Image 1: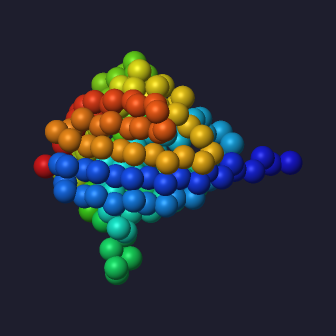
Image 2 (image 1 turned 90 degrees about the vertical axis):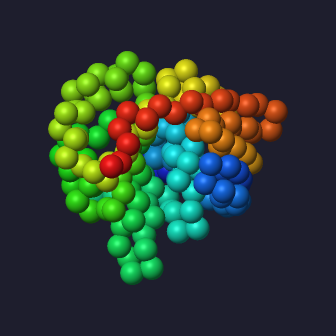
Length: 181
């Protein structure tokens, strides 16, 4: 018998001083049985970093042909494709052909660095690709904040990210490995 996803109810308040975006999103997020708390929290931070009124969580891990997060235009074209982890060069190529902007958030410390060293030369032709690494110490600290009912406050200023849940605060310093042209 297959395990069911765990449902998380999240109130995500985003204050992005860099983009002048201030909004609260009420999200119902299904955590796949194979998804870790770290990945779930990275997904929420990625959502906050790209927050927009049309940004949506997708089925994520349960489908191969969808990103973790996307933003579609009113005419149903893919504007933004957000992926987490370490996608293959083939998946990056397909993503860059499907969406106007592709953002990948690798995490996992040394594993992510090895992945990037291996794949970075094959990504130079993708002008619409952004790769933004999240440090392992930061994402592991985020995982400890995971809770099935969360009020998450994310403040973004000068590229720095502060995530708070109740009395706990985690600071992240995303590192851009590849910026879109």
